[in-house]
Length: 81
Image: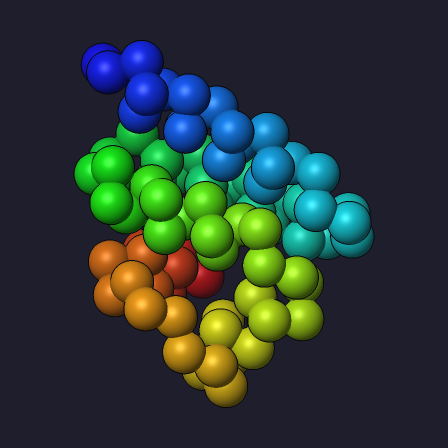
């Protein structure tokens, strides 16, 4: 695996574990770990943006109240729920 890709994966996993609320930490780390190894670099960059959003925006995306530009990540999110 490309070291740049592995660096992005490590960064995303770390960030998903330390979000702010314990509930979102648990949800995000499980979600991220379930998909992170399967994603392309482009999807990983979008996942990085996603895990760095505030909890409220993520809840809105999950509930369909807000858009997120990566359909692959949205598909994974819907399948994960």
